[in-house]
Amino acid sequence: MAESFVDSFKTELIADRVWRTTSRLELAIVEWVGWFNHQRLHSSLDDVPPVEFEAAHDYAIIGTVDLSPSFS
Image 1 (tube, rainbow, N blue to C red):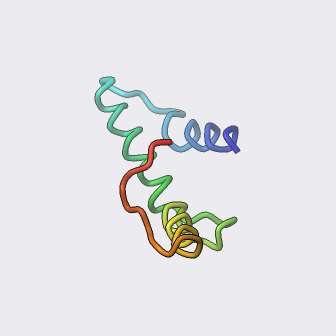
Image 2 (tube, rainbow, N blue to C red):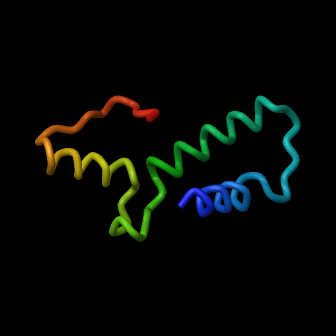
């Protein structure tokens, strides 16, 4: 799974690009990770973004959804 993430990251964001500053690269990384977790449709999750799938799972298990950012 991690290998797939790294491959996607390299292919979609890093490959064949030159970043003028590290600040621009850092911002691009933050935006890409946000898209990857919050907007990208994941075929293994019935074409639902990972965050929505996790929220639905949490609701089904505990009856509530934690909307706070999770960095674990």
